[in-house]
Image (tube, rainbow, N blue to C red):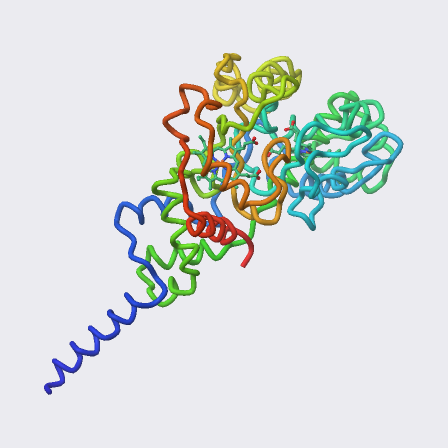
Length: 375
Ligand code: HEC
Ligand code: HEC
């Protein structure tokens, strides 16, 4: 055999080996869709509405405040009481437990930088406004602008950072301005919280560069689940992009109680909030960054729509959905597999439909979702 033919045979053998081994075949169309779920970590824009976004002193101040029980009235709760760093900044409960029980599940705080809406109903249009809410909400930390400004004026360790971050002392600012700046410092800190890279990211990158050996490390079940996610399941219509969320709202047929109409009430609360981007505390140009807020009008099709959550690290943050009503990832997938089409609003009916997945396909989707977590 000539050397040339030997090389050819050898090449064929390697190709055959690759095809037989772990990696499934992905079409060009599938590759293009998978590419959209990266790269990770992403480059995310700083928040123009928050002059303290990406400011080192503000980040440090926000981190200290996040863990400080003194931020709550009578020192009972800190942000971390509910958003536990050991649980991806959620709490493992179905619904939050403040001074009184809350109606909603406590979401993870990872990957929030660059998002447009905050809260399950999009009650807030900035991370800093969302961060002010629990401080003054009676059911949560039950504090006030006066108490917060006293804390910031009184503690040595806060004085220095506050002045560096905001260019003046807390004494020189009115209590409400101090409260807003505390929200902005908390936001600057939370913007630094990102999910680590996952097995999915390694697979995605290997697939795009044609690194066959590396892509074989990714479990076959997860690869099959990925195909369903971007294919027949059409999960990526809503769980889009590197964060696996379009950042918008949808109705997934989880019964909305009268008490929680989701985005419908969310828009009303957004518009009524004095700290929204149309208000005086927006550090950016409202002509540009408040357009969506100005346009938001409640309409009946928002009833029962909730914010589409990102799915990175989702295996670590059970239970699921805005009300914590689904205990496991398997049950979430089962929910999609057996949707009651009658519960979906007419407009969304084309996006979601019962998937009639087999048990193996459900397992595969779950393996895929698990592969979005820390390796
Ligand atoms: C008593 C528990 C509790 C405390 C204390 C608490 N949170 Fe939350 N947090 C929640 C719950 C529940 C939600 C969901 C609220 C909603 O959708 O209306 C939430 C939502 C959020 C969100 C929105 C995330 C998203 O994906 O849109 C942010 C940001 C946030 N909290 C930050 C904070 C900060 C900062 C503090 C401290 C100042 C804090 N939280 C204190 C329970 C809590
Ligand atoms: C029409 C948009 C849409 C589609 C399509 C969609 N989802 Fe969702 N998904 C949502 C919304 C909205 C929620 C949150 C619902 C709530 O809070 O009540 C959600 C929640 C989830 C959650 C729970 C996350 C958490 O932290 O609570 C998982 C897991 C999930 N979806 C996976 C999937 C999978 C897998 C598919 C495909 C079979 C899919 N989704 C298709 C909109 C969608």
